Image 1 (cartoon, rainbow, N blue to C red):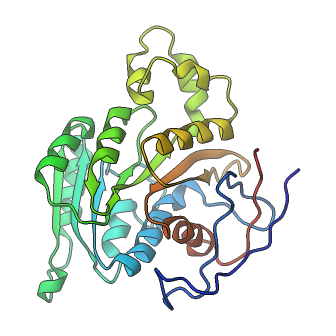
Image 2 (image 1 turned 30 degrees about the horizontal axis):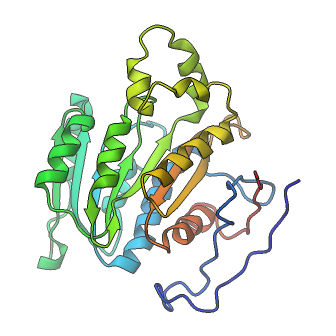
Image 3 (image 1 turned 90 degrees about the vertical axis):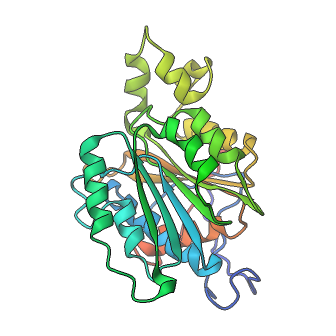
Length: 296
C-alpha cells in the first residue's frame, strides 16, 4: 500500500547554496514517482515547458551549457506556448551558448532555421550563441556531433522521439561520451501511451524495434504494465553508468488518468533529481507537495 511521505527540506545544500533554499528532496531512489491526489499532472502540451524550466534551474547551478536536440521539430501543434527548443532559447540568463538541433523532416528543418533566424542580435559578447540546424537522421548525425562539435561540461541531450525513432545505439553513444566530470545529461521520452499498440502491430519486420530497444529480447516488454516498462528503461540507463535516473510521467489532458510519456532523466549530477522534481512540482503547477507509490 502506498505510503504518503512528508516533504523534507535539506538544512544546507552545498551545490546550490542559498540559490534554492526551499529545494525539496526527491522521492527515495528505489521508487517510481506516480502523481496522486494533491498534485495535478503535467500534460503532454506542457512537456516543453517542463524541459525549459528544468534547464533554467540547472543553469543557475552550472552557469553554462550546451543543448543537443536530436528530434527537434515541433511535435505538438496544440502547444501554443512553443516547443522545447523555442522555450529553451527564451530562457534568461542566456547561459546555454551552443545549440545543435537535428531533424529529418525538411519542413521541420525549415521551421528550425526560421526560429534560429528570429533570435535577437546579441547586445554584448557574453550573449553570443551558436545555433546549428543539422538536417538528417540524428541516429547517424550523433556521431559527427560528438566528434566535431564543441560540448560543455554541462551538456544536455533531448531525445523526444516518435515511437521507435531513437535507436538505442544513439543513446549508448551519448552516454559513452565523457564530458569532464560527468556524462551528457539525457532527457529520454518513452512513448508509453501507444507503445503497446505499436509492439503488437509489429509481427514480421522487427528490425526497427530491435534497433530501438538494442536487442532481440524486446518481446518481454509486451506483457509488462506501463510502470514496469518505465522501470525496465530506468534499469538500462543505470547499466549505461548514470548515477541518477528518474522517470517522470506526462499525462493526456483528454483522459486525465492516462500516461502518454515517461520523461526519463538520466544524469550524473547529484542535484539533477531535486531540480527536475522542483521543475515538475513548481514550474508548471505550483508548490503542492507530493505523494509517491512504492513498487518494491
